[in-house]
Image (cartoon, rainbow, N blue to C red; front, side, top):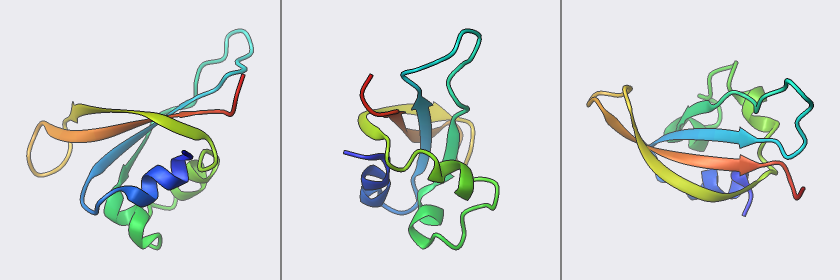
Length: 92
C-alpha cells in the first residue's frame, strides 16, 4: 500500500505523522523530517498548509505498510492520539 492510499483511508479529524525512511542513505545523511498532517486538511487538499503540500508530495508513492499510534502534544486534548505512518522509499 502506498502512503497516498493510507492517507485516503484516514477518517477526517485525525492527526497523522508521516515518518519517511530512505533505503539508500549517504554517509552522514539522515532520514527526512517527519510531516504532521491534520487528516481533514488532506481530505480537502486546498487546506494543506503551503509548506506541507509539496513536502508530502515527495513521499505519496512510497510504501506505507507500517502503522502505529503515539501520543502527541497537539490538538484540543493533550496528549492527543496520532496515527504514525512509516513510509519507505521503494525496495532496497
